[in-house]
Amino acid sequence: MRLLVTTPQNIVLDRGDVTAIRAEDETGAFGILEGHADFLTALSISVITWRNHLGALHHVAVSGGMLEVQDGQVVRVATREAVADDDLARLQSEVLSAFRSRAEVERTARTDAQRLYLAALRQIQRLLQATPTHSTLEGRAP
Image 1: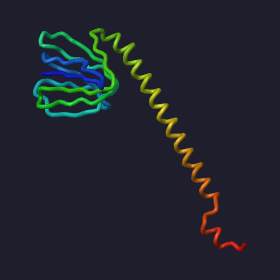
Image 2 (image 1 turned 45 degrees about the vertical axis):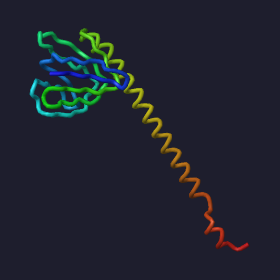
Image 3 (image 1 turned 90 degrees about the vertical axis):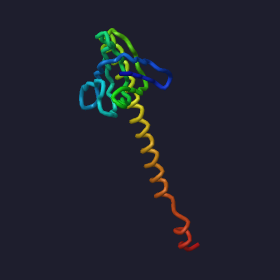
């Protein structure tokens, strides 16, 4: 099987000697073997582990993304960030922590931006309701 992991900036991993893959989405961990049915899922911030044809385990941390299995032979992962490293402990303790921290900062920034947007809309609505309209002015005596 071929495993391809890409970010918007580069190809992090392109291996053609993969015999098994373990990944994780919101429902939990799952495995992929050669011949797997076509499949598409949104990945969690997690570590993807794969075994090569010699039986050695390798890992890549991903900051979420999409995983696609095509024709049971190609597994593609598109993610914003990825770090390949055979040191699973380092990936889990350092890299995933950094990915989660950045995701939380982004989530907070989106929430703050949404609050500002809604506050601006409420202010516009108040101003529009407080300002007399042209038709209201026409009905008044001089």
